[in-house]
Length: 286
Image 1: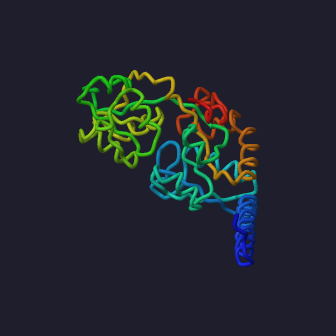
Image 2 (image 1 turned 90 degrees about the vertical axis):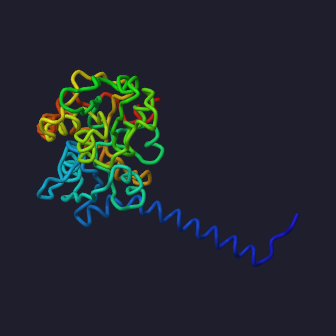
Image 3 (image 1 turned 135 degrees about the vertical axis):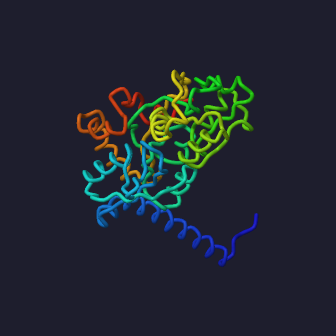
């Protein structure tokens, strides 16, 4: 067995010291995220312009179910302002991990795959799915199964969203799944006939149908796969344990109260959409 020389010992010691500094630095940064936000008076949240979950109005105001809840909770934590960072859906988790913002406030479904990358708050809602179709629903689409059975049907989904997986579970081949960057693109694709239906949460589709005019409609009735009943919450970096713990403490006291229901009512949320699972249960689900 070869013995290490003095220079090797020095190099090994230097590397160990450096790794310890980095480790301690990460721990300090994690503990300081909440303190930093309190000191600077604001926190940045990522959103994807998906109504009614998180979007900017024409005047530039950040609103929606998730941002409005975030404003209440962060105010309770001594952070008076919430600044939004608009990001395509598929870039939300990478943006969070890269430090572009500190929280995802976009109504993101809590899934096992996402739980391996980020830490979630407790859920704020549970919702099923829906389709946006052309007026009259010419291809008679009332479920993912209907779309799977018709080889001529193309389904539009939000790139990076859970609907891609739901479509595959139903048996829709990838060549008939069209990824689109945002709600506006999905609405345009249905109108133009590029896709025969667009899939999103029921409230998102309702919002799109109301904005889409007479050319489109929400498919009624609609059957949601059991595994497609999703619960959404806020996403944090895994190292930001202090921030998540403080946020969850206030969130648990708020969700389900009259103040909460009054706040999210204008976005279409009712008692029927209150969360049915915990974050841990969502992360462990198959």
